[in-house]
Length: 580
Image (cartoon, rainbow, N blue to C red; front, side, top):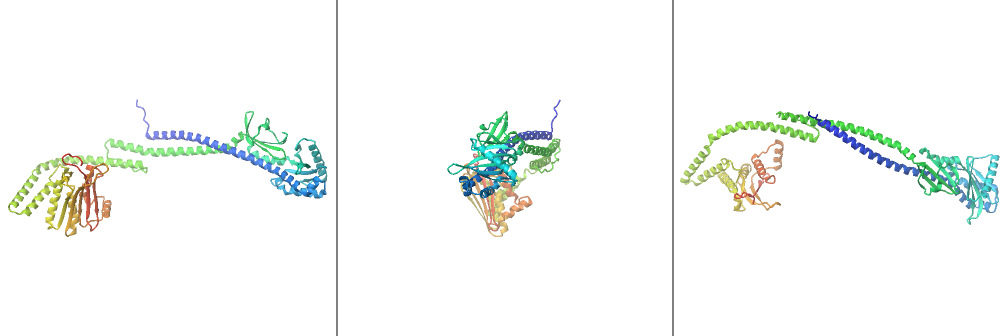
């Protein structure tokens, strides 16, 4: 049983769809991997930058205390308070508030919430003044004063440079104030609001799960919440990644001023959660693009395969003998060229069939006419020979030469069938007969000259009647319209060997006749579709058919300045039949 054949259309569609799916899947996988890697790397850089940005914000709030401390050490009134216990309380408080207000912009979050709510300074005699961000009642201020007195006394009992403790919504910080000789001149105490610190680190909520922590020099957590199992001693770098119980975390560590180190920890899985929407968007775009490409491929595959089916049908019709069938025109260049070639082929086949049939009929008629006229040329030449002999006897030499030249011209031009190439000498003999008769016709108003480079060139073989028509053209179209004496020059020589080492035969036919406009001549050929001087173009086609496109004629002419025709042929010896 014969296997079912597939159509070109279905095979093309199947091949294109399979290839498209395979290529699309491969490209989609590569695209996904590249996008995933690039987005992961970019998001990791964003995450590191974000953690560092928050660390910078926290460090900026610490800088508030640094600038206040620097102010305390520069203010003379406050230095007298610390070193000499001198100065009125109102003046000392005024100077302290001036310094705090001077740098208060760094102490605020969102322009409203303070980080350090209360700030106290003590001298060594435990005399103190304090400033508060919010106005307080007298009883609340007295309670706060006693509290910070206790805090400073507790700091004095600790072997720490910076002392932190938590109570309620605040983190207390106590530290000593030194002079230029690093001698203790007093103490400072500050109440830091936990809510303000949480506002700083709350910006990490975009990663859903996050941890932040403040640790003093003794390893005690003074703010935030530590991640279970986290060993801060192992976090020696400013940023990196740790592994806890099989889960990976990114961290940022910064050692700040006043003995506190801040930590930010983010689970690595938060990195993928942040890039998931972008990946889904990319895959959505990819799937839509794939569907659009697949639809376009199906459409253009069917559209492209349809002309092929039509071409196959027309070829089948030609196979059945219908040579009048034709293909329609297509917009696709290759199909259009196939259509033109197919239509031209069927036209020529049909034309050749008709010509062969007609030629068979004409051949039969030509055989009959040939048998009837077989003796006519011999009879004509015998009569011309008899006339010339009688003129010779009557000593009419001029008329004798004219009849002899006419007989030779007719015999060379008309009655020399079966010969394609003849010796150059015989061709030039025909040229001589023609020029002699034309000279007699116009009473010697036509002068001519035939110049040979070498007598050896006379044995070269050239196509029969390839020079005489050029001379005849010069006479009819060049000199006769001139209406006065004219000159025709024929020169025969060889050219230097070309790159292949071949010498060429060069024949010049030149006249001083009326000439013509080459550009108008070419335009006439283009518009009318045929050459006005068929004989010349027949010579060109004959030469190129015999020897190739590199041989042939070149024509130069100008109105009133005559015409110059150069003919190039291969040098072929008559005896050996080889090129010279």
